[in-house]
Length: 413
Ligand SMILES: *Cc1c(COP(=O)(O)O)cnc(C)c1O
Image (cartoon, rainbow, N blue to C red; front, top):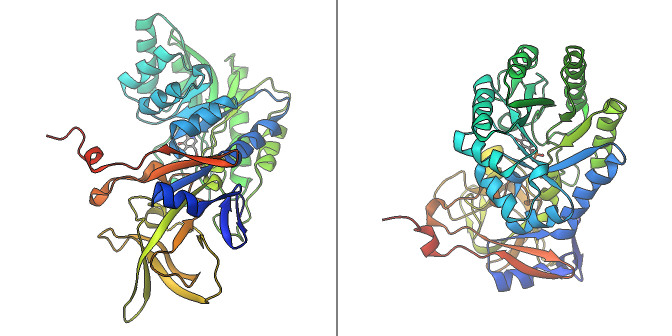
């Protein structure tokens, strides 16, 4: 699986031996391919061609400064969901004029920080939020550009926890009520009501729900323009899935963008998208070392030094991640649960998995872990968070050192 390849039975990322990184940086350690991140970003950017567009990377998927700097250098915009993410993007040299601020619960301090930075637009999710943005913009004597995030009520056909576009979800404004809310927004003097946004969910497996959502949003744009709203941009959010299993078939980035382009062509709209997972997931692996093998009456366990605090996706979403040995051998296979040291039965990276025989000391790569991996990691069980490294131009470097025990207690009395 790209960007990984076995070269003489040794697993490499873009030509760099992963075991060298593991032995120098230690395990558990996330490793990202800069080339793969750029390839995915450019697949979006290039596919839009001459359609005016901005690709706003969703920072929450993986927010390391080196990843943000790489994308900022390639011309990306950013989708943020907190002032902390704004702080990161600005530190990484991101262009404030290409930032959109999403999220259902922005605080006053967060809105004000974004106004100060001069972001492109707020994706607003409720009338009280519009009132807050309006009053804080007034206080600064500026006008804030807003899009209303509408909820198009489509079924994203993905995991319940990452589906966001039904009326039963907390996100957005019911598309049926949207015109009324736009009228309220228009009466607020410090808002530029110029956009419509939506985001229907994550790990979408086909373009059908996206097409439905886009058609509903474009329909709304037409109705708003008929009422003399100057709608200039549409933001279709993120959500494109990635292949976690070799047999998963997911539309290519270019295919999704093709569908979007076709439906917005010649309408005088600037199109924005907010991909997170589809930019970084395939670029990242989590390296871990086998500590023990253990057999109970019912099962065999491979106990490794990475745990649910490092990668919570299997526990939280029953997610599947391929696991590859860093060195290929021919000693046969085994079926096992791959589990970490955390004191929870939910602490597993894989269940009932057919693996090559592995032994204590062996190194493994948990694949497709670049998105919502490190970003969702925690210090549960007083475990320092993993190191992060980046492979770029045939070499590698640490981009976040492993946390120390002192780091664990910072700020405590
Ligand atoms: C999470 C999120 C995204 C990114 O979703 P992916 O599935 O990672 O592409 C984009 N926009 C909003 C509003 C989000 O909440």
